[in-house]
Amino acid sequence: MASTPSLPVSLLIASKSQAIGNEPQKKTREDWRKAKELEEARKAGTAPAAVDEEGKDINPHIPQYISSAPWYYNTIGPTLKHQRPQEDEKQKHLARVGDWFQRGVNLDSLTTKFRKGACENCGAMTHKKKDCMERPRKVLAKYSGAEIAPDEFIQPELKLDFDGKRDRWNGYNPTEHLGIIEEFEKVEDTKRQLKAQRLNTGDEEDGGEEEMDGDEDKYVDEVDMPGTKVDSKQRITVRNLRIREDTAKYLRNLDPNSAYYDPKTRSMRENPYKDTGKEAEQVDYAGENFIRFSGDTSKHAQAQLFAWEAQHAGVDVHLLAEPTKAEKLKIEYVGKKEEIKSSIQEGILERYGGKEHLLVPPKALLLAQTEQYVEYSRAGKIIKGAEKPVVSSRYEEDIYINNHQSVWGSYWKDGQWGFQCCHSTMRNSYCTGERSKDIEEEKKTGSSVAITAIKVGYPASENENTDSQVEEQVEEEREPELLSSKKEKECEASLKSEARRMKKREKKKKKKSQKKAKGVKESAHESSSSGTDEENEKKKRLLEALKVEEKRIKQVELLMGLDERKRPYNSMVESKAPNEEELEAYYIKRKRDEDPMAYF
Image 1 (tube, rainbow, N blue to C red):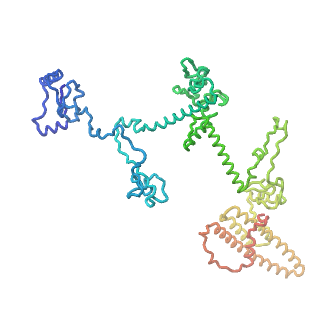
Image 2: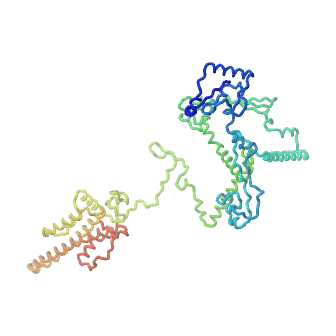
Image 3: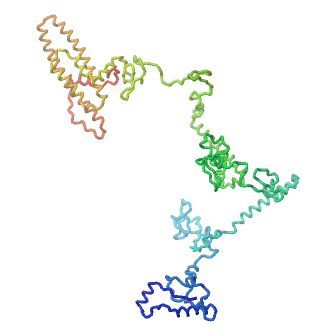
């Protein structure tokens, strides 16, 4: 074995800087020949073997790719250290085979007094109060000094090697298997006692020993199933992978876009007849998902859940090992649960009452639905059977109120219901007939109801000033300061009622003036001229009062629309007695909700 030192580049540069004369020279042909002869002599045993830095001999038969160290290992002479474990100290600190974590608590550390630095809750020395896993005591062990908990074992820091981390039996206690052996012995003793009782009573039949044998050999001769082969001599049952009489899953629907068939697991989860128009109940195979979530599968899942919950509660039951016991326990549990539930319900009904509300007829009877057979023709007439009774409403039908000719809700306009006969949108209003319809048509054509109402109320002999005042009033009413269309209707209704009153007054005054005119014509003429002047002044004052009243109503509505916290105070308003014109304007503009004819 020829060992050639392989030095890294960094050492070569450092050696050049330190001693240029000691730089290793390139081997000549003669040097290579001598090294080869030395290697052959060592293999033949005529020359001593090479020695590493620890003084150990190196086997000359080791190949070069094992004996030569890599360049980054910084070796100068021959060595095999790079082939040995590098962390000998670490190997010494590894855990042994039997070392494992200690379980339970240290019973040797039981004390009766609280120790300083121990847990304030239980009294153990191995943890503090915030790390205590015991239930918080009402009186801590620090103050009571009673029931001091034993200390836990201080677990060692195990440093396991590769095999130790993967040892599945590491830490197993063989004494745990004694419980299984004891349980098996108890079962065997019970069997022996039962057999002895049968022998004493004489109930044992022939072949009793065969009854104690395993169930797998009991009925092996009577097995008659498709796809099975039974050898009665060797008592072996061989089951094929698939019953050959069955149709393969992938042959049920040859459409490549149908249900997916997994050849590795031989499963087809979806229904292969999904798009053929056949329901899942009509076909013999509807996919494994259909089989899995139908039939007794849900019952089996409920039984398995009950067995798990019972085992968690401490009952020794297993669904697969003891299915009869699990089923009986489940039936008993469900029965007791229903009894407790019914007793609680009866107690609540006895205490608070209301049992009559639970005795309600079925929903089919409440909705007047029956199973009476009725046969209809193509035209919709009944051929066989009685007609279905009409369900009557709880509201009164075909009853007209307040002289109306139609019911409420037969008319709809601008988001409001009304009567079709008079187009009224007030529920308790009187029917005015076609007159209200004519008013609606006049509004559509553009004629103003307010102007016509005021002009009818004034005589034809009035001067042009009153007409201009009326037009100004109407223009002010048409200003876009109104809050909504409902307020406009209220103003129009009030002006219309005012025009009617003025018209009646004018008629009365004309009659009086005609009677007085028969006496003295001149005095009558003077009095009539003075009377008309006074009336004109009253009308002017009334119009001014109406304007002021409308402004006041708008201001009130604006203040009422504001939040209470944002309304201004009303303490600086001047209060005085109103005059006749202000009172009349107030009565004209006042909204009378109790009057059904207020808006007409």
